[in-house]
Every structure is written in C-alpha cells, then in structure tokens.
View (cartoon, rainbow, N blue to C red):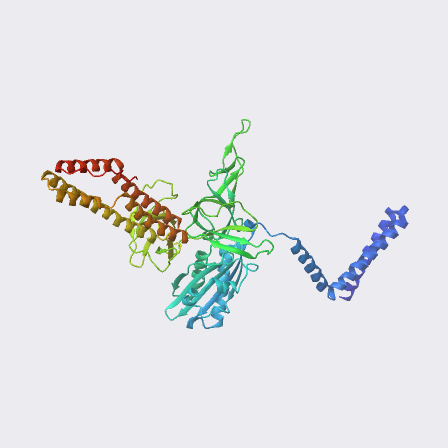
Length: 579
C-alpha cells in the first residue's frame, strides 16, 4: 500500500516533467515567452488557490451580500409586468371552529393540503399565502357573514395583495361545514358567501378549494372600444398564465362583468380618490379566445393557403387568451367605456351566479324605507334593450314588502325588467338573476306623478259633471221656452251661465302643476316633471276642445233663440271668453 501511494504521488511530477520537456522541444526559440507564460499560469493557480481558501473560510457571506445588492438594484429599475402577465397576489385566511378542529396537527394538515390544492389548481396564476388566520375566530359561517369590507381594508392593502380569500372550517360530530368569501382590495367589495358540507375530513381541502375557486372573481381592465364602437375590449389580469386545472379558467363566452370606476390621485401613487360601483350595469362577454393568424383575428381554426401552386400549407395561428370583448347593458348613459386614462381605472369584475335565484326588493330612490307594493313587472328575455323580444314576457307582481323572486336561467344570464306604476312605465333596467342572492332596486319616486294624476281625475270628474248639468239645464230651458214660462227660462239660463268656464279650469290646472313641478325640481326628478307636463298637457287639450270657440258661439245663439221664442229680449251681446 505504501508503495502504491508513493507511486501515485509521483505521477503528477512525471506528467509535469514530460510536459515541460515537450514544450521545450516544440518552442525552443521562445524560451523567454514560455517562462512568462509559466509565471502567469503559476500566478493564476495561486490566485485560484487563494479564492478556494477564501470560499472555505466564509466567502459565501460576501457573495450573498453582493447578490442581494444586485437583486435590489434590479428590482428598483424593473418596471411592473403587464397586467396580462401579472399573477394574482392572494392571501388565504383559514379560520377554524368546532371540536374536530381543536388539534393543532389537524389544523396544520388542513392548511397544508388546502394550500397544495390551490397550487395544483392555479399554478403560476396565483402567488398565494395560505395561513391559519389569527383574527378569524371563531371560523364559522356566521362570523364570516358579519365581516365587512371596511374591516378588511384596515388589515390589508393593495400594495401587498390583490385578493383576500376567507375560508371558515367548522367541524363537529355531524361533519364539516366550509364557507368561503372573496374580497377584492381594488374595488373594496366582498363576494356573496358560499357554503358546503362534508362528512369526512379528507374531503375538506377539496371542498375548500372548490368554494374558493367559485368565489374568486377575475379582474379585467377596460382598454378601449372596437373600431365600430359596438363592443368594449378588456385585458385580463394573468390572462397569459393558464391555470393547470381547466375548471379554474377565468373567462368563458357569456360571462358577466360588473363595472367599477376607480379614480386615483394624480400624485398619490395608488391612493384611491373615488371608487364607484355602477349598479344595474353589466358587460356581457361575447368574444374570447380569439384565434390570431396571418390574416388577422378570426374565430375559425387554422386556415390553409395556396402558395405558388404548392400544396396547402397551414397558417401559423395563436389563441389570444389575455383579451376579451363584450357589450354594455345599462338602464341609461353611464360613465364607463370612455377614453382610458392613467388615473382612471375602469374595472370589470367577472361574477357568476352564486344562487339559484335572487330576491329583489323594489324601493323608492329617495325613500328606501318605502317599498313599491303590488308593482307590475314584466321580465323580458333579450340581450340588448333595442333587440326584438321573441319570447312572451313573464308577468310578476311585487308582494306587500315590495319583493319578488327572479329565477336564474343558464340560457339567459341577463334579462330586462319593465317596471310599471299603474299604466306608466316607471323604469326599464337590466338584471342578472342569481349573481346576488338578495338585492335592492332603487326606482324613481312616482308619488309626485300619482298625486297629480289623482287631482286630474277630480278635474275630469268635475268636467263630466258640468257637461251633464249643462245638458239638464239646457233641456229645462227648451221646455220653459216652449211653454213661454219666462221665470223658469231665466232660472235655467242663469244655472248654465254659473257653470265653470274655460278660464276657471285653466287656473285649476295651473294650481295643480306648479307645486308638483317645484317638488320634482327639488328632488331632481326630471322624469316625474316630464310626466307631470304630459298629464297636465293632455287634460288642457281636452278642456280646450270642450270649450272650443265654435261650441260657445253656437250655445249663445241657441239661448238667444230660446229667449225670443219665449218673448224675452235677447241677452246683452258679450264676446265669449277666449281659449
């Protein structure tokens, strides 16, 4: 063994001597240069040896510090990724309650398995922190339903996360109940609460991930309109990051977006100046996963082309998963879909039905405590308000609480509600049944119009009574004239002349319209004022027709004829009152 070791130690020396003799034989004329090269090689070897020694004595700390400084410099100079390449930053808070979740090992296991489930479901699309909540206690569905958006905004900021997913796991002897809610920190709104129950603990992570997926609401940002102005175009956050689980796809054709306006401070970075949800407005997705090829955007599969008589060659195409297009459904003009600006974010939050139906309460806009009782509502199944309704409308009536139930229809995610007050169309609004389990629709105050309409009915009744009374007195005057009973004739003619005339009815209409129009102006109810003018105008036209100048001249001529027939002098000539 000693001989073997001595022989192995001599091998490098023999190799070195052989290489030196070979170098001398080949480069005999360059001896000085060879010595310089050998010196440099020796210095390099010494330097490498010194670096190796430094690495062994703690150089790793210096290298780590250098890498940290370079990474910090890169992060400072690096711009944020485009929205379509930006993953969602999600905070998953899991609260526990019940006897079956008391053990710390059970809780740790559930947290670990739920986190693994989300990573398998979303992959690179989510950057998730899955933790056991320190403040969601007890982790029950009741506690989850009482959480407000304001409470969460005090705990989390948009600088840290985009979404907060709350899970409540409650276990007792009957099984486990899992509840989920999602909070979007940019629009500061909580999603409806979803719940499910299981018997076996092993199924809790699967149910929790499914509820989290159904609660999750992807974010789309409006970037402009199409060339023909018929559709809106949106970019989808993390649209280029396809989730491994196909059930976690962000957008499909027919999905609904709820629009929000988020205005930022000009010099305040990400500080929000104004946040406005647009109620009763939706964007219906109509174009997604567009195929883009050499010929531009198309909905078809790969196309083929003929090149110089050669065989058909497929055109290279790609699927655009980061953009979507849709149409706006609104009850009137809304400040959404205008020119995109840096300080104004026009956000669409995709939201799918969370319930099989929606309980909608109809109330007055300026008096939410006053429900609209026994209001007639027609549900019309169509996309746009201008579309022709092919199906007959469904007639609904609100109950004594002003509520009605709208069933969700997968074939028609949206519908139009035509709400009537009496015979007048009070409002025409789009609605998505099932998106919110309970909702309130605020309608214009129609009490002003109803008051005016009631007073006009009284005016109409007075006009009808006056016509009947005039006809009776005219009949009495004709009989008295035939009998030459001058006393009865004078009484009948006096009763006719004492009836209200055109001017009196005109003053009455003015006294009805003026205070009602003033109330409408004070409440900024332009629709009520417009209806008041229409109602009063129609009644004024009816009175003008009844008191037409031709009718009054004919009536005066007939009375003079009856006077002459009874032997009385004609009445003093006086021009009839004008219209």
